[in-house]
Length: 361
Image 1 (cartoon, rainbow, N blue to C red):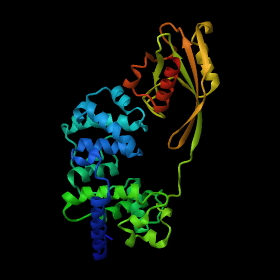
Image 2 (spheres, one colour; image 1 turned 180 degrees about the vertical axis):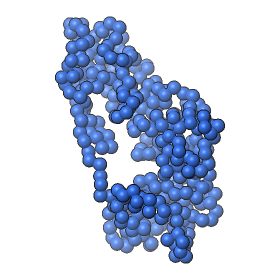
Image 3 (cartoon, rainbow, N blue to C red; image 1 turned 135 degrees about the horizontal axis):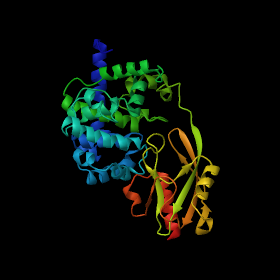
Image 4 (cartoon, rainbow, N blue to C red; image 1 turned 60 degrees about the vertical axis):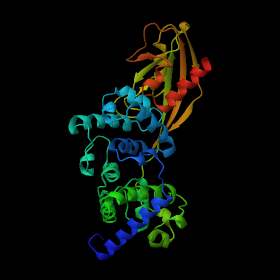
């Protein structure tokens, strides 16, 4: 496509249409759209991965208030970064965010690289995120293929190859490259990139797309074929799994809770959490190890479900309150309600602790 006159004509057509549509109908009010500062754009792109804009807005403002630049973020303790991220989910993003800031300071003198190729070598920045930063901040002529853009392009092209195949993914990247604007890149690349994102988010949605509102409808193959929802095609899907966890909320006489750091890999990696057990027997053995049962009170709390992307966690909390002397079995520390917001707590654990605190007081 990219080498033919027809390909050039189509590229110009889609580019001009998307740019014009974005200027009049796209999202133009978001705080990270008012800057070409790569630190702020990078922060927004990482936060927006698998997270709704409405949720990101408050976190974005809080992060910038505490970490106004990459140096401030790089020099912050990881626990503080995780604490501010708590509740946003997908916590590996926060760990990579911190590592990336440190690498930008150490290897690039505090300045983000100006090309997508080099940006993609930084922790937590994949090809699509690197393309977004390079397009928005430096007007580099590079594509992105996040979920929204992939959906728009596969439908418009009628790209019916299986996206579970790495070869087909590479092919789509090549087509996306060929469709990029070729003129006035300083203006066109940020607007075109944002426009594809906006189309996927508000018009070319996964279900019931609003094709009549799309600027590309006249040339969209999926619309002509009458079945846009079949795109993108992906035959291999990750299977959902269920796990049952026992949570031990150990609270001392001062209202503090015993928190441990989760393993470096797996669910909630590196975050603070109450002790977790895979079955009731292991949890009971832990409680028995807390000492004289006459010195504490045990209460089973209502179980609840926490849904992750491909995992259902059935959580069964038990609260043990009393006098435990200096500590509890295993590594950990006592933290009170005033300290919980300062460390990284998984959202369901933070909500659970807040709820038990409200009950007690």
